[in-house]
Length: 250
Ligand SMILES: C[S@@+](CC[C@H](N)C(=O)[O-])C[C@H]1O[C@@H](n2cnc3c(N)ncnc32)[C@H](O)[C@@H]1O
Image (cartoon, rainbow, N blue to C red):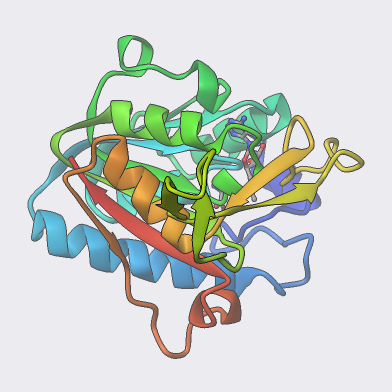
């Protein structure tokens, strides 16, 4: 695609093109802050973990049009693979990254997170999974995939909307066997929106509470799990804990 063809379309993200033009967004800039706040949080986490050392490779799960894949290169990652099931996003991502002259650093593969594996994509020092978990009917399976793609010593960043958590105890078959809740999931209906560019592909969404997310990440093999700090002037959902970015170390 030529630059003028890219500029005729509207995009989920603003990509700077070689001429200095920037891709127009289809949300009128309303969502720019969610992207820029997450990019700032990602940069802070990368700096803290890698301390300015070069990062050989990364995986961007649910790469959409490739904006975070590009952000990874901007943050010193040598080779990025974006994984995305929607063919139109894969095509857009390849086109815009080619126009930016970065096709030798970033590639995109059409793939559902549940079909990803270390055998197909390798293990990497850095794995991103942004904006995906709350669109899935099998979020724990997806978290296991993200963990499996993270190399020993590596960092995995999970960013997701969360639901308010339930706390308390349940009788586990009998009043003498009482178990504490470790977190909870909310069910959200996207069954009428599976055609949407940012939506679930199946429509049934299980959204974790932050306690559930942290506990699950600890149980599936991350050695350390931390909810990352949010800049005070960041996107409102992150500031008000409606979404979180969680770091998992392998
Ligand atoms: C809200 S967008 C987030 C895109 C990007 N990661 C971000 O945070 O800006 C959700 C993305 O997840 C993708 N997606 C939906 N179901 C998926 C699945 N089962 N496996 C991988 N990606 C999926 C969508 O196509 C879309 O690109």
